[in-house]
Amino acid sequence: MKRFTCDELVELTTAYLDFALDPAERDGVRAHLACCEGCRRYVEQLRASIRALGDPPPEKLPADVRDRLLSAFRERRRT
Ligand SMILES: [Zn+2]
Image (cartoon, rainbow, N blue to C red; front, side, top):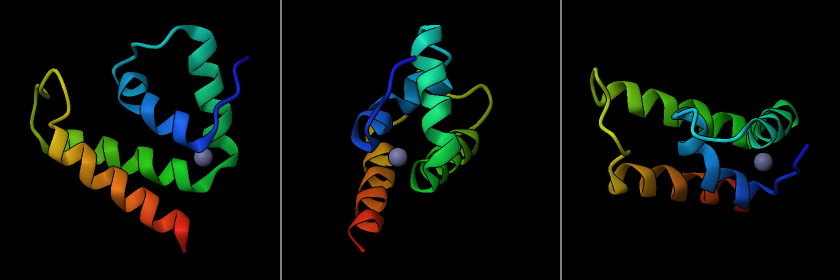
């Protein structure tokens, strides 16, 4: 199983939510989320944002939405 740092993980979350990861990566993401509350919250917010964009969701998460979530995530980790 792959192990990810928080920074690597947030880079993978959009692919994770698109089911675009290979099984080893997906397991690694799941394992990280199971023990990292910050990333878990980030993924939940990302998922909620994607849902808010409509159905069917756009191919790719708009860069501004992703940037906003990402900076909120980084902000929280600093405190
Ligand atoms: Zn993490």
